Length: 146
Ligand code: ZN
Image (cartoon, rainbow, N blue to C red; front, side, top):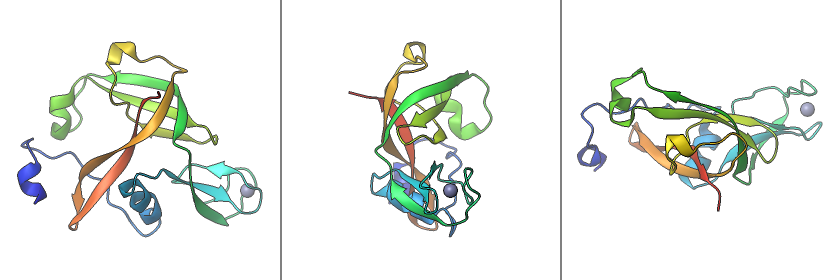
């Protein structure tokens, strides 16, 4: 089981899916990047939105995004905020702009920190973060496209 897979002494914090975010996490587990779309004005919204930022409608539905994005901004973190990240310092934190428009906070994978460039094309990839209540939890990360 997963306890024996965990090589780090301290596991990373794992986000806990709740009822509202469940479609996002279920999608991630299946390799699908789920975002929200307003059914009133068709605006695409980040997965954590509960109200449309364009028309204030609460009638949002889940849709699968393409997974294509460009790097909007990033930072390299040298400080250890959680012991679970100790093995990955320095690590990057990134904001990507999805092809559909919304921006997501994420991390870039498969690239050296010194090679990261704002504006580069990236694509979603899904990484297992751990498990909550016996369920694997995956999160979208982004790697260089192509
Ligand atoms: Zn709207």
